[in-house]
Length: 332
Image (cartoon, rainbow, N blue to C red):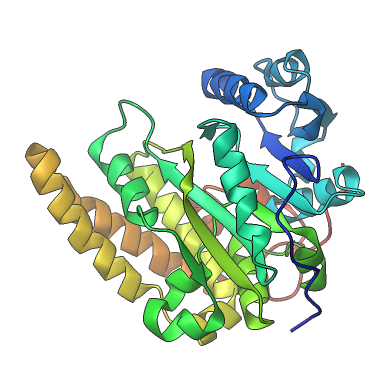
């Protein structure tokens, strides 16, 4: 393991930069910006990277007092843009918090609780609990509740036999990084279709760092996906897992966690929305088909991959050997 920084809790928010990538965030971003503005004592702690929004999302950031950087959406890369943002905004900071524009923070205490994870000097990254937005349907509500339980937990590589792929779970919709650990692990991977958080977490665990799940630190975040979007989303997950052999090799295949998810979803829908039960096998068949196609993306034509994928921009870039897309850093 690389050298661990000195122990000590994050002192308030002064040692932190909060980074939010935004593109056409709409009403949800306005809600999230308002909640974030109320949660931070100094709005200049927040840096927004806007991919040329056409709906005034950049104006929302400026009106909130956040620092704003505009980039060409064609250069956006899940890992590359975040790594660029760390280098651009985090000089002199010890920690970075990443939020997506549709994640609504539940108060300053949620940010402070997330940063409190770093009182353990072996924790390299931490993520908070995501609860469904008010009015969320049964499928999106279950997804949030399944992935984000009520009990906090610190995970290490030794937990892989017990937790499988879940040991490396991390979500950049609400996550914090010890910048020394992130840098020691090479920063965010830039070659991945998405899941730069999973890539970073895998590297951290394999080099001796720990990941903390903070259930007491909360945001509201959920998505209502159509069947077509579910297929695209899981296709991208399949591509990600195909790009991360070290994840599969050290933490096991995703199918075991998938089986637990299906059983849990059946129970949840039966108890809370029984009329939706016939859709459970349909949605999961679509998810699994998308995932398996994604795992085999290298055998598919690039044009077909683009059609099957939610992340179109990934397939529009020049290819690098073995990845199906370039791996260069984002340069806005």
